[in-house]
Amino acid sequence: MRHAGRSKALVASWVDFLPPPLRAQAESLRRQVQQAGPELTESIQWGKLVFSMDGLAVLALMPARGHLNLQMLQGGAWPEAVLAERPALRGARQWRLDPSDVVDPVLLEMVVSAALVQARDRAAERPPRVPREDPV
Image 1 (tube, rainbow, N blue to C red):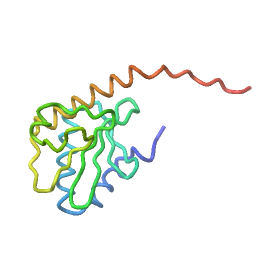
Image 2: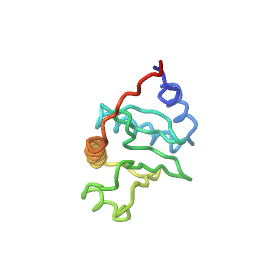
Image 3: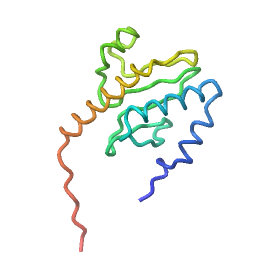
Image 4: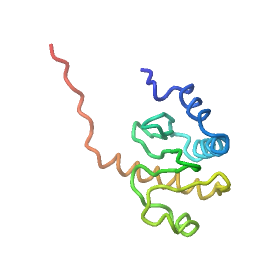
């Protein structure tokens, strides 16, 4: 089944509509997240570029005024190395990325890995889906 939010053209359009300084950064972040988490799928939800695993939203890239936010959607336990690098993140669920910021690929990979672990833990806690019976 096709989903409009998962269309590659829609994701490409979302990136194209970003202001030029954010566009280049968003493309770079997209590539890095895909490399760190190849099992993640992309879609547009809530006006954000959302990275999901098995239908569960894990990370989101959200444009803000003059910067991008990388949001952890399944809990806010950021890796300690990221917290040491950006103390303002303590307790937050998003990482503010200014266009001039050079994102350390190792830190980003740690964030993606932590988000995937949290998502797997969340998925394990969810009760299994029971298929609905069709009325006859």
